[in-house]
Each structure stands twice: as structure tokens, then as C-alpha cells.
Length: 421
Ligand code: OGA
Ligand code: ZN
Ligand code: ZN
Image (cartoon, rainbow, N blue to C red; front, side, top):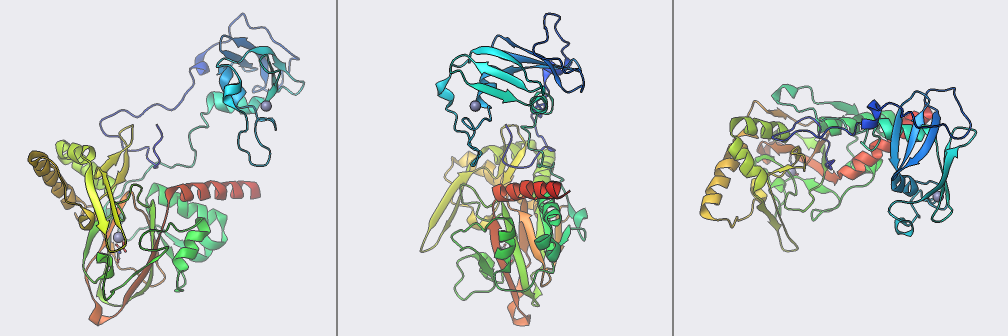
């Protein structure tokens, strides 16, 4: 159910699924359970007893709480070196070598209070620490702890876009984590005082992992080009849009590093697409439904490529939460729908288009040299005002980083900070 995106806040139409709170929490200890193995009796979270019941192993802790762990789950999660490779930390256990309900020959506790199971089918022994079992019984650690709720924003974010210092981000795991965490929650941040070096934007991406290459290269130059292959490479105004929405999986994040910005105009505009979509839902639920249910064609082509994908403009996950906005006039393909659906699509699309440029939701500012603007390309739409190349120079370098890499690096930075503490 967990979407690849970050959202826990905004739910439209459907109920949010409850967290995996375990019903065993409320259960009292059955009187039939008798302790096995040596009694620990000391810490409340030590295991008092275990017994196989049906398809589960029932574990009772000293504080009286209990939980039934499915046997197949326990067998699959044996972490001995024969089941979990000690170097790769990947599973080597073959799930199909045991029956769907593995047989327990015996189960008990070691002197240290570790649960031991001797399996009847293959004579294998597995050990489970009581703290590890307790976490899975009561804390639902399967939920990724690093995914903060989305904090939706509007024009009131003006002048308050979160800023991080380049030097700190590059040197400190803690500051790196703070920046990435903000990218997940707010979907926008500026890394300030980024040195004006060629391809520095890629080096910052490499502080996380690596830049995601596209048909525009590993990085791209945003400036007036003599024969532009992309509207961004002109001095034209760009309406707020998401990049590469003609791809099956558009890049998760976009980085734009300002090297020069002396030309008149060229201010950046940004809008939280989830906030705008929420406004559409409030104003016209039918239009919202059209945009979240109608796959539309997006396309980019030049002499070397013809990249097309069909997907809704407002993408929701299986729980009805915002997942991904695809919005780009330049990449909107020639739609081939029945006339009435075409008319309804355009009506809804135009409503949403008004909202994503509405001054109530949009922020606007001029990038300064050294500003590295970073944002969630599945959520935040970006644009710029037209500029006058005769009045000065405007040059940005951009690249993309995917969400997997942002999440992974945030997890490793948090472990690094915790380990150092
Ligand atoms: C882009 C883009 C915005 C700008 O390169 O994708 O939208 O400020 N650029 O030039
Ligand atoms: Zn094992
Ligand atoms: Zn763009």
C-alpha cells in the first residue's frame, strides 16, 4: 500500500489505512500457557514463554503482552549465516524448501532469553532476540520511519524557502540529512553559496548518489541556445510545469544551479502541485476526478528520440493519496479520446492550469548566482518569467536525482549520525 512517495497527510475520497497496530496488543495472556525454558523474570520486555499454536508461535513477554508470529514468517526471517548471507546481508534461504506451515519440533528460550526454534522439516535451528520480536509485534517497523508527512505550502512560503549552506551540506551528514528530509516534507529547498564551478550541480548530486541521465544528458545547460531542442533553452516564459512527464518514471527531483542571472526578467516561479490539486478537489471534484482518472499522452521528440507515456495529470496511489503530478503544456501530446471526453479533459485541465499559476499558491523569486534550487519533480511545478538576453546573461546548470537515491542517502546519513552519537 505504501506509495513510492512521501505522503501521509492529504487523503482524498478514501480513508487512510490504519497503521499495522497489532491486535495482540490488547490480548491478555491465556491461562493455558505454561512457561518453557528458564524463567527470566527480570526485564519487562524479556520473553516469558513461547508455544506453537496452529500456524503461529505465540510469544508472551514478562509484562503479559503477547503476539502470535506466523511460523512461515519466522522461518523466512531466520538470520543465521545459512539463511542470510553474512556479507551481502541478502537472503539465501529458499522459501520453497519448507512447507507453507513449517513444523516446529521444539521451541523454547535460551539462558539469555532468546527464542529458539528447532524446525521439524529440515532440522534447522533458528534464534530470535526478544527485542527484535517485540519491535515487529508492536512497533510496525515495516513502516519506513524516514518518510515525513508532506507539508503542503502556498504563496505564504514566499521569502521562507528553506535554505541550506553548501559547505555544511557537503561536509556534515547531519546537514545533508536535514536538507534531504526537507526535500521529502516540503519538496523544495535551496542549497546556498554553491560554488560557481562547471558541473558543480552534478557533484552535489553525487554527494547523494549520482545524477540520473536523460535524453538531455547527465546535466543540462539552461541558457539561450541557437537551435534549441527544448523551450527551456530559449528566453521564453515557461509556465509552471514538471519535467520529463513524457517518461514512464519522471525524475524524482530536479536540481538547478544558478551560475549567472543578470538579464532583466527570468524570475523563478514554483507551486506545490499537491496544494493546487487539493484546491481543485475543493473547487470542482468532477474536474479533479477527470484529471486523476484519465490517462493522457505526453510526448517529446527530436531527431534522436521519441519518448511517450500515457498517465493521468494527477496521479494518486492505491490509497487515494497524491503521488505524482504530470503537467507540461510543451509535452502535452495530441490526445485521441472520444469528443465528449476530450472536451471534459480540456475543461478540467484548464481549471487546474489556472490554479497552478494562481498567485495564491505560487511563489516567485530571482535566483542568485550560488543558489542551487532543488525540488520534488513529482510534486512541485517550476517555471520562469521571460527574460531579455540583450540586458545580461542567464545561465543555469541542471540535473536530476531520483527519489530512491534521496531516500537511501537519508537513511545512511541518519545511521551515520546515530553511530557517531
Ligand atoms: C528547466 C526549466 C527553468 C528556468 O530547465 O527544466 O524549467 O528557470 N528551467 O530556466
Ligand atoms: Zn537459518
Ligand atoms: Zn523545467
